[in-house]
Structure formats: C-alpha cells, structure tokens
Length: 92
Image 1 (cartoon, rainbow, N blue to C red):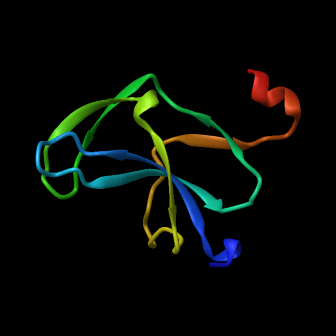
Image 2 (image 1 turned 90 degrees about the vertical axis):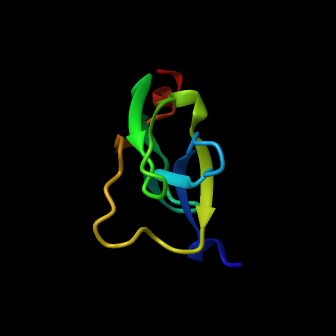
Image 3 (image 1 turned 180 degrees about the horizontal axis):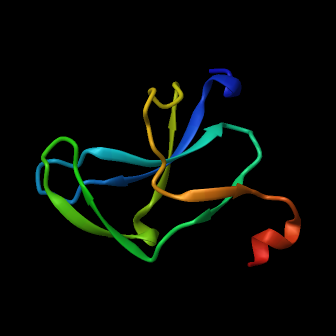
C-alpha cells in the first residue's frame, strides 16, 4: 500500500465488555506528514458511538491507528495540535 494513501489517527478502545469499538480521537494527517505537538489532557470522558456508554480515559490509553482513508466530513479532533517547529519541541 502506498504510504501517501495511509492516514494516522490517535485512538482509544471502548472499555465496555463485549464492545471494544475503536474510537479515533485525533487525525494526524497522511502517514509521513510533519508531526504535531498535541495538547492531550491527563484524562477525559468519552461516549462510545456504538454502545453509548461513557468511560474515563487516560492519555496513556491512546494508540496509533493507521487507516486507508482520511476522516469523514465533519470529523472533529479531540485534541489541539500545532506543527513541530524545532527539535526542542520534542523535549518539552
């Protein structure tokens, strides 16, 4: 698969027993595009679009998800981001 056709997201997995729906939280752009420095809260609550249950999530529960398509029209990223401008951004 061509890397230009792949898109990266930050995602969580629903905690409801038997659900396990993968829920994209942030769209990071096409694979290989410049990264973003994200403002991720320590924790947040989120309702699953499938089972409708709300759970509390921690930043450590986010994982990278690669999909073949960009997000649908109307997708809203949960986290603010800014382009990485210097290598020192990675240290902060």
